[in-house]
Length: 291
Length: 291
Image 1 (cartoon, each protein chain N blue to C red):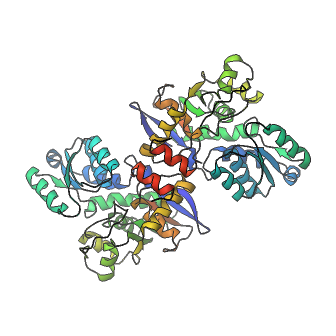
Image 2 (cartoon, chains in turn orange, cyan):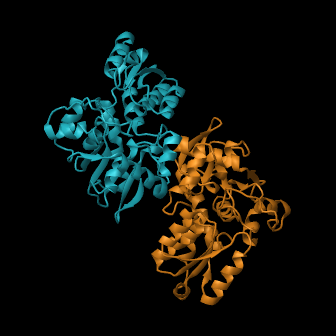
Image 3 (cartoon, rainbow over the protein chains, first blue to last red):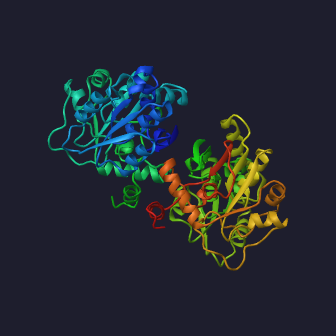
């Protein structure tokens, strides 16, 4: 972890953009794939992802010798599509919005007899993402008081909640995509509306959370926090200039919430910088302030 | 340290851009300033630097309550000038080329009765930079086989040579600024010629090395390696896309040499990424390939 000073408070960032695939998703994917039986490994796995879970599954599959099919949106960042393909995974593209990615994945699973590795609604995946919490506690030398984590479907947040039972869990979502925050508030799963708002956080656009994530988070996560594209770009610039880290929009959402004063922090707060897979053109525009 | 794969070999990078001031210079500066006597502390310190040693001295001086005057080139990156000023140091500007920075510094030292903290020709500074070697060995769990380090005046290289007596030391300098490589080859100090070539490595433009650095390096450093601006920009792009790290031109010189195949690497090689203080416009141009 790296120290960071925000509004005069020195707290911590967990720089998951430094993982081999540039994102924390390697943790859950490895945990799931390495637990497959020999029989399951033969028919391979199918995953649905805008790019980071895709790379995590492709990375683990390559090392374990498991065939992997990844269902990805046609408009995913090129850096993520290229990296997933380069790791040897078979890619099936779908149109976002329009096609139902879960239907596309179900078809692939059916045809191949493969195991679906869900990006967040999977107990092994949740456990794997939770290793961030175990590590953070070991590195800090004590239990973190709170985690600030970006949230797509709630896999990371649920993992942290289980790994660190005493820590407050702050769930940060992009404007218009706070399906987890809304689900926690209502106590039931909420689906994204028809008016899907544009967001630069390509990694944080789930249609809805899953029952397992809601079950873990409903009594644990603090009220959902929402960040704007402006908040996120400010955080990417902060990470560039102060931390010397390349962070993608979704990966900067938690930092964005802290910098915007939307979440309370103390010296035992851990902010997860969840990924750094961003196209050069987009990153260049952001750091020069044009984005 | 972070693992990195270069031409099929998995070796290591020491990411000194993640230091609080964004560069390794914090090590030598802290080691020198914290060793000053109470009497010496009163009159303060003077340093000459294009920006990273400046920030290191300013950072240490602020924490130790020591007045600091930093002599900086008027054309230093704005990010370095601003950061040094923000840490409370008094800045004296000089013109590069034209004015003799050592004369400017000597005048300040004389007027104030201050201690000169030389950026590389100082035993405490060299010892401090060498802590990179001690740490690398502890993190690797064995002695590194070799270090690839950028080289301005030779403070970092000399520190590594003393800290890890069995490691090969590869000294990497920008084209036209290989005063240390030439000095090692000739066995005597070599001054930069009148035709000062332009380089994007603002941190690696010494007029000459110093006797203490040459004394340490002459029987230890491998033949000097020279990198071009093109090599350096390629390395900055590699650090951006593969490592998710922001590295300034001079900070990427060692990685540039490895990527360009100019230095042999093995699995116990440690490449020092020495700093990440780069203006956003310059970094944006580099990553989109326009620089």
